[in-house]
Amino acid sequence: MSANPTVQPGVRVEVRGLHKSYAGQAALKGVDLDIKAGEIFVIMGPSGSGKSVLLKHMIGLERPDSGDILIEGKSILDGEDVANRFRLAMVFQSGALFNSLTVGENVSLYLTEHRLKPAGEIARIVAEKLAIVGLQGVENKLPAELSGGMKKRVAIARALVADPQLILYDEPTSELDPMIAITIAEEILRLNRRTGVTSVVVTHDRELGFGIASRIGMISDGRILAIGTPEEIKASTNPLIQKFLKAEYSSNHNLNSQIERQTP
Ligand code: ADP
Ligand code: MG
Image 1 (cartoon, rainbow, N blue to C red):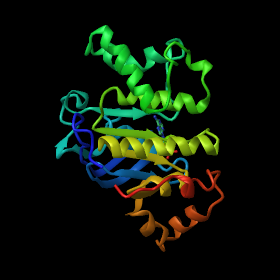
Image 2: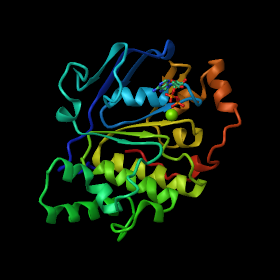
Image 3: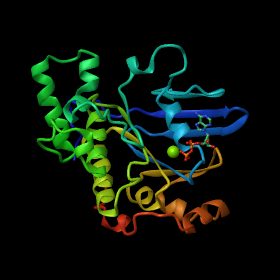
């Protein structure tokens, strides 16, 4: 299956020696990652380990105390707004929809703010992106009228409007019931295959992580413990990884076996 030729393929991301402290408390203690163009890279670890902080650095929402982030080999910290150079999108944990705006207005925000398209075309693009995540005819609804799973889908549709080269998902299945979590996981896989967008997924949900990852980076207390394929991570003898994999986290059981896996 070839990627859609109208969409640029995903970008490569490098994280180099990233350190970040808040009020003297270290959240990131020297993080290094090489994320390949077009892969689904999962950052997995317990709550409070620095996952969201790391993701915010990758999209330029936070600046490190030291270290660097490179996209396609270029530092995103050298002054020029990263948003002007690459099409990046983030699906926030909460969905972060504007409650006073309709679904259609939420999804089209990027286009209207950047005055990218004539009004007539915007409606068509919004409908197209909503259809990609399996939603139709919800443009005039308010976020409060939607279920948790639908809100996450709208948040993904909104991210897709930018035709991103890099999409970052923060805990995309949290607060969702297991069956809905499966459809969100399938959506992440399908989008990745269809467009070739580099996808970075932060989660503490092991079933999700092992179900969709090309590779996994295990994080604990601001440090990357190991990087590998799901099989390599499962075989890790690192005691912290073993502990995480055995711990009784609330997770979506059987997700792994229910996500339809295909080799790209
Ligand atoms: P998680 O892995 O659950 O996403 P986070 O990346 O949100 O963890 O947080 C890592 C650590 O950094 C936590 O101890 C958190 O309290 C702290 N932290 C994150 N953001 C801030 C902030 N803006 N101000 C102060 N501390 C923060
Ligand atoms: Mg988090």
